[in-house]
Length: 321
Image 1 (cartoon, one colour):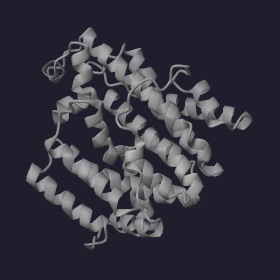
Image 2 (cartoon, helix red, strand yellow; image 1 turned 90 degrees about the horizontal axis):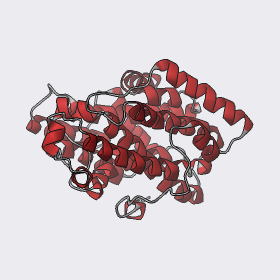
Image 3 (cartoon, rainbow, N blue to C red; image 1 turned 90 degrees about the vertical axis):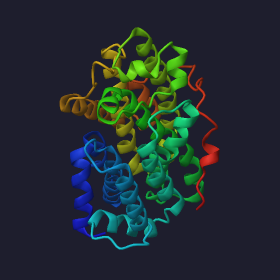
Image 4 (cartoon, rainbow, N blue to C red; image 1 turned 135 degrees about the vertical axis):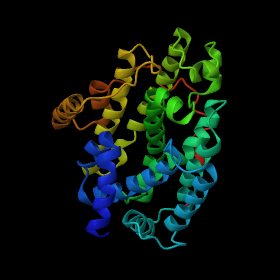
């Protein structure tokens, strides 16, 4: 990849993904540069459907189809990130299946703004989160055995990151996009109507629903972090740090008593840097990703981990290589 292509992806990540950017900078160059490109592609597609003042649904769909064709190498592009992404897919054998899954998920955001069950949301995250985990695993060029071991955990970690984002951004998703990503079955179980969320009613029952989904996400973190040991040694700390930083949003959510309607929990730069230092200090003494995650992160270690149902399981998502 050309330096201009890498820098274009890096600029997008620095502007729109500050938390992930901190962890990405600690990856070795052979992984860091492709990660900038992957992230750039993800954000370019995401912005098509997430701009509250953007194009009409028909125009959004047309733009996504153009991006799909460019990403698959079926149409030329003058965008440096799209050019580099297409080259990256060829170099690392990223299957067209996962490019299509990701673009399909972005297209779903045009017409779908509610999810009846967690299984429905998980189907959406197959493209928006699991596909990201698969592509990140692909660019690490693992052996077949390592890949098979790492992949299910990478998928779970991708889900965990996205679910944390959904829980943090409830207010933003309602106000800017009229979307509710919390499963309706979870809201109903706690006596909350979707219309109450849309009306920005931060009831105790709503906070209980958020608490339940936070618990689900923390199970996903535990499953995801368990696979970091299968990644290349020089990549493990950066991925661990990304998990610690994303999970820290749960502490911020608890700090506002799970009220992510009246508050938009965020992490200050000082808080992030403190976590970088703390995680790094522990890493110097003990390079066990799981042990450090449970020591440093906002996700408590528990013997009851894994009690939530996560849909039909990662086996239905195995990629064709």
